[in-house]
Amino acid sequence: MDVATITLPSTVKLSIDLTDEQFFDLCQRNRDYQFERTGLGELLIMSPTGSETGNRNIELAYQIQAWSRQNNLGIAFDSSTGFKLPNGAERSPDASWIRRERWEALTSAERKKFAPICPDFVVELRSETDSLKDLQAKMREYIENGAKLGWLIDRKNKRVEIYRPGKDVEILLSPVSLSGEDVLPGFVLDLNGIM
Image (cartoon, rainbow, N blue to C red; front, side, top):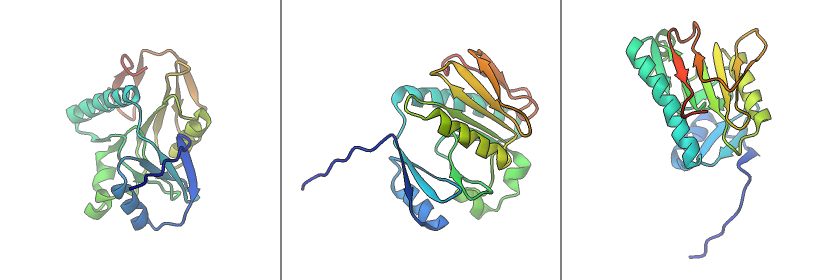
């Protein structure tokens, strides 16, 4: 059998008309890739992360999950989880968290697919191939769609951008930890091994 090989950029953007069901099915059938859709319906295709980034992602998700389990205030999610935002976009943050009462207000059917909800808290960890401009736009989109707190961890520039509704983006240079503030009460992310 002949095999065709193509080289694509790290993120591919396609305009394709898919129903929510077709998009979910596409994601389930192609688990080697990460798909997202913008609010305009553009399909984004991303390759899996590199090993180093994957290790940092799991450290991030582990810390959030450990805190969430301890206090039982909500539900934590990893980078493979998709959410349908109010603007129609389907996004998959590197880590996220939703208050328990908001999660439990969803039906069982809504929870099984890409839940129609914007997480209360989102984190994006910039990899070497990620466009900072695109990630910043994504963070603004989360806040515009209901997120209460968002962190964009930019290892390349050794900084963290903190996003909050109605406030300017706060930039921290070379922080060693981050506070979950009142959104994740008592949570402090240790950036050792992540940053």
